[in-house]
Image 1 (cartoon, rainbow, N blue to C red):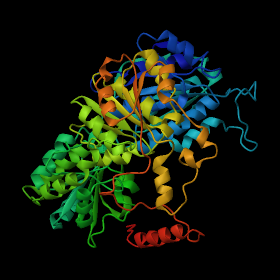
Image 2: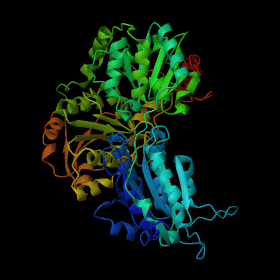
Image 3: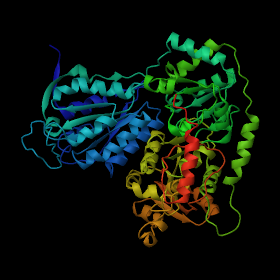
Image 4: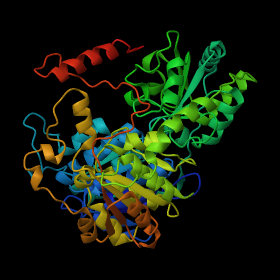
Length: 610
């Protein structure tokens, strides 16, 4: 018989996690974020304590934002490393559901370990237990089923022998990569089993590089050869495949211009001759004009989100064909695309070899020059006067303060659009945007996760006042742990981005800016004082010039450094962009809404669903 060791389920889980490595020999799960409650403190808490030297445990302040930090860590690590997050059985678990959805949309690995009710059901109903009147097996953790790639409820210790390898396969598989939830019944966490010793031997998980099927490759090559004006849409899969150098080679060899999604931005340096910049709703004129003219669109590692495609109104050439190179067949088959199911690096290499010396000879210099001539002045220092600075001027100030190690990050609101259009990313990985789920509250925790993934990076987080109020508690965690990063808070007194959308669809300003919300005139939040109360070094500045002076001092801070500046909620970058479908009422008492509906119907007529 094989040698065994008697361990509780929680002890076995922690021991297994600590033994899993990536190709570089690094522990795949770097550590565990934990808020303990009655559903995990006695079982998993005891196991984590025993392994605290070789698998660190960190204490956070909110389960959702702990998971955001873990997800940002995985994203900035190129999905080669990840973190685990554990909570108790009730609100702690449901707090993580939002983060699980974020990771699912963005195809990012995180191991979620919520406690659960008693498998034996002896003390039912227990504290924080919901009860389904028609299904005795349901718990709050069933909320994780639609927002995770792999879900398992552990009701016996020995189930870990199959569940844990499945969990790690999911997190390390390029096609299926995403969040995993192992729901841990609290009595089972403490129950023992004789586990095979061999189960805990170190294991290396290799990133699979799938090469294209010969038939799919041939069809894609034939489509490319028949094209006259193709364009490449670079998505996040280019980064996760470590294929940025291959993308440059492919584009240069074949003379094809490249446009970048939010997740794909920085795949090529901003000044690369073939990089036409941001695409779609938050895109630039150079990129969007090329996409409108393209008779073939080659998506590489993109899921063709509506912001990328202009709600499928952007790629408007009447003979347009779509080729999608992606590790996941689900993404590769979208909207009638010719699929090439393959790793981005391997797929581009195969396409290039098949195309040989064929070059489309794209000319991009004039289009790029026109684009930058239109938008560069928006980021200049403002002249003298009392007007509030714009978000574009704040972006310019941060750009001037940035260095070669700077990583800018954001997630929701106004700044993702401004950064996509205006930020000049000089190297791969220097731009970190969560815009798949566009989750307010990701920013501060995410900035901490990025810094933990790349300690040498100069991490600068953009966040608005509305987002700051959504989730700021991990500022205290970063201060406690001495994790340094910079947060630029643009205070426009409300949800400026959605206020502009409300106005753009004909609506009256209502309930977004504080000035148009019930009691909003009584709101006077001192964000600098609040950040300082949590342990950050903070300052409120009164101008773009003062912002630049404050940013110059950011490296002196030992933990998080917060700079707050008041901004104008109304201006945004007008050049570039394209239609985005938002339902406008068919009938309304407002003339502005009726006019917006007419515009909506004209744009809707350009939409191509296949």
